Amino acid sequence: RLVGIGVPGHEDEIYYSKANSDDMSDAEVISLSIEVGEEGGLIGAIEFGNRLVAFSKTKAFIVDDSNATTANWTWVQAQWTGGVAFWRLLAKTQNDLFAMMSDGDIYSMVTAQEYGDYKAASVARPAFVDRWIKEKIDLTRLDEAHAVYDSELRCVYWFLPLNGSLYVNMALVYFIDRPPLEAWMLHDNLARDSGFRATCSAFGPVPAAAYSKVLTGGPVGRVWYLNGDDVLSDDSGAYESGFATVHLHFGNPRARKRFKYGHIVSVVEGDFDLSVDIYVDGIYKTTKSVSLGTSAGSYGSGLYGTATYGGDEYLVADFPINYIGTRIQYRPRNNNADEDFFVSRIMTDFKELGLRPLSTIANRV
Image 1: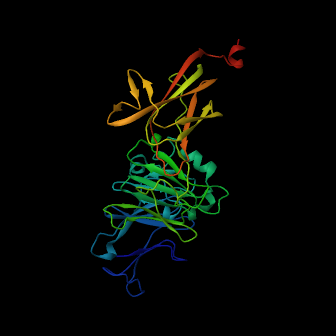
Image 2: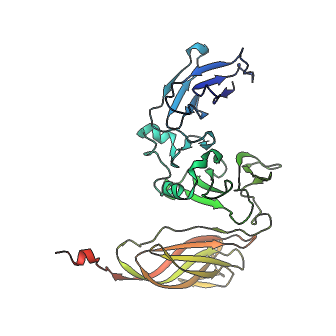
Image 3: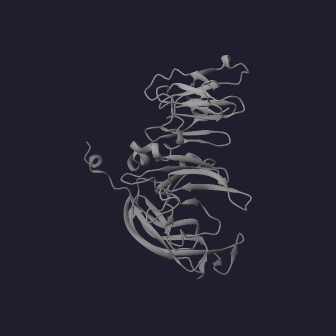
């Protein structure tokens, strides 16, 4: 049967079509009333397992429509606290269901069933992604946002509008097999039109291929395949790709350190430079240009660029830092068209300088 909600004036009703048909005429439609108890009524529903789960802004309802006699269909309010901001912000994976709330938090339904509250089941809070969403995303426009699950990469794309943007123009990507603390990645291309300027998304087959990809549709009518196999440019133009490490304190977050040198271990991909932004104690300090060409570098008793490690040709690139602080962060990035890069490790040479007492501690009697 087809299922419908959101009929004006009947927001608390779920409508079913005739069995094995799309006929939802007055003569054939079956309705089920839910005591939602909040403004807006039901705003989303999705089948999970053999049950229909319907959502309001702050609640969820489990519908049992398995009985052959429709008069015996019933519902129960879910045992967890949590709903969904908009119907397109529900993402179903093979064994879980993820939803975004109006406050920007994202939770797992399976975990919420165990703990009873969406905050305890949040996959965004461990990495402080929920704070980033509240600061950067226009939460008043979540009716433009949408989510889609990529079963090939096993990740959920959350397409969201940045503050001040005309359209949805970026995606937060959550990899479901990783711990929430390290599962998030930001994808965007704010410099030009791209597949992340998306008004809608879907997961579908690639023509003449045995796999599927995420497709997005943009405001000017283009349809994009994300993560093309052989395309390392964006419509023949360069785009910036990078990542950021955590703030590294090397086991002693209070001790001041002199950060002397940095070393990047990478796979040789081409004769181009990688830019590395360096932040010390959260403050931007400098950008280093690191060559990813085939020049050899020494590492232990091996010579990178001429020797093979693990089946790949590796390169160690060194760069000076010369800043003092308690923690350091690296942000490698590449904006070369048609060039790929892979960084397997970043190492730091540093010397601990000891603790600098705070004035409130030094003057304490």
